[in-house]
Image (cartoon, rainbow over all chains, first blue to last red; front, side, top):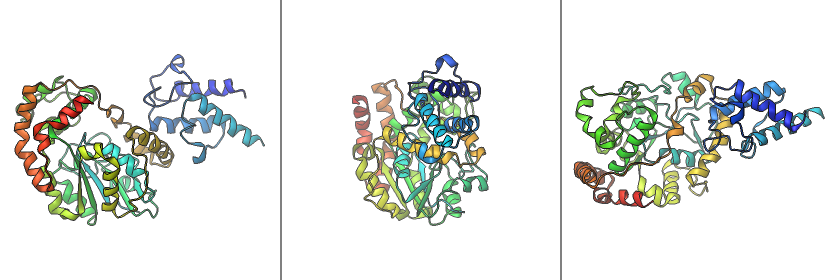
Amino acid sequence: MTSDQVLERVKRIVVEDLDVNLGYDDLDETVPLFEEGLGLDSVIVVELISFIEKRFDIELGDDALNMETFKDLRSIARVIREQLARQQV
Amino acid sequence: MRRPNFFIVGAPRSGTTSLYAYLWQHPEVYVSIHKEPQFFGSDLTTLAGAIREEELYLDLFAGAGDRPRVGEASVWYLMSKKAPSEIHAFAPDAKIIALLRDPVQMAHSLHALYTRSGNEDLPTFEEALAAEPERRRGRRIPPGAYFPEGLIYTDVASHAAEVERYFEVFGRENVHCIVFDDLVRDTAAVYRRTLEFLGIDPGFEAELDPRRAGQRVRILGIRELRRTHPEVRRRMQFDHIKLHDDGPRRPLSAELSARLRELFAEEVARLGVLLDRDLSAWTRGEAERSATAR
């Protein structure tokens, strides 16, 4: 799966599965996730992680959940790709 | 199941969220992921995010392990007449932390918060204060108000009797009062004294910039939230945390400010005696002038 495909699926999760008032076009993958950017809160981000784990069939451990991961949607997509690559080995 | 053994009891708009973020970072401290569980204070309106079921409340501390200090923060415990005895019955050896702020600044800030959160429908602080006599009789409460007690701003900002109640129930030595001005001016010293009060390593160096501390504990919070009871997560959605930042406030008129300072003068003096601390700067409006300067 390419970076763009992963990012596209993450954006779809945000728009279709989370209880947030955001459209696909609102999702700039380079802005912060929290109040200063997309305005997500921690509870919503935990839901996002759950959906990501289900849809990509991966597990994100505590080590993967750091400030860099939640910098923006592109960073989340990068962590997902790394995890997918690890699981293929 | 661990029980909390320290409580940040208030006051609202007085730095509790920042202090919470500073304490959260300490390796000997475990705090509830849900700030404001409002488990105690049965004389107050139950907020939508409150955790009033004991099993669910104790679940907030399930991850505490063997950390010596386990705590939570609910800002309305200070105002509640019942909370001190209820907390004491539940946790007799608890340590209590109260943050206290210039009442004029605190009440003004609370009004600004409430106009954003929907608890208040009177757009100016002057109007809200003028409505207090009617509101005491249960009138002019906004249809969307979720916490009517909070609308009597002059009561909410009067802390002397509240602090006295905690002193009486827990003993003076178990109640640590922090003056908001000190927290802002010398955060590191206030933090250190708070750790000493809690009997844990006072040398720990936490991130003490409020914004960066918030970002740091947010990540800890996300990890913790994954293990949190789904019902707690659901109720946390009612938290008005996103509204907490002190947004722009219309400055108080000189006339109103002077009137309020006179109104609170006796109260401030009484609190100063209780804390053995000169708080006359509040009566002179020095915090207000420095807030305006900021």
